[in-house]
Image 1: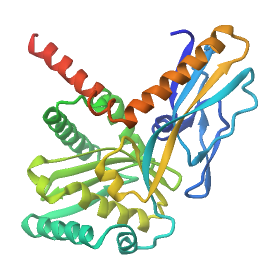
Image 2: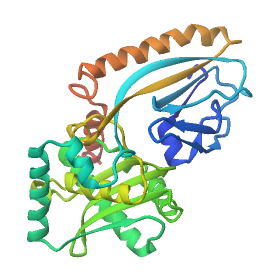
Image 3: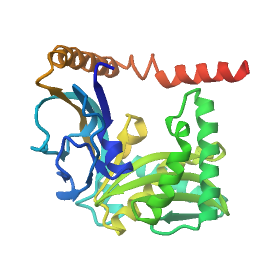
Length: 316
């Protein structure tokens, strides 16, 4: 519409291991103090008058590619993000002692002991190798758990809308060590699954789900314990919860950052110069409504989509 092209930086970076063509292929992560070179994305539309790159974490330092000429850039401040900066920690205990209150530590560890005492619990991380049949079984379980959980919440889950793409990408990415699948088992039954993607020494947590029957044990917290332990043992310096605030993310994260949008405006287009301030105002206002918990709280697009989908299914 109106010659506008849109890309989501953070998802492009870790799902496709690429970077929007407006930027140089090398990006610098100020949290890990490392540079990573990614492939350059193909030009999506050479006719675009406006190009909006969404969801750029402010800790990523990106340089505009000088070969892409004829555009000016306007940055738009957006929502907060939450991450674990693990660079200064060499053990799980050191992170817990430094970041969580004594009460929180006691509560989480108590639930972990209770879970392990009552059930035959073991933990697995699949990173670099996984049997294909096992992968198929785990992802079928993952899909069932997500479907059940979001039906209960009466919300649409966007990962379920693109499940085949995500499933195929995850399998090859795990084999290439560009993704990992963390699983908590009760005997041979997966009761908690977390899919993460890797870029350099950073992990981006893409999705997680669990069996409702084990809810009282706070499986998300137990999963986080084991993931932090694995990250430290495997020289992962940065664990990012990606987009969307929650109490769980704020409890575990020790670093809060801000997402930005970058709007590239074609200088030779009068229409682009007219529309650009309108787009900036629109996204600024949208973020203001998010900050007041109007969008995402009282008004949730995912809840509305779930209601529409439910009604369509019911009347088939």
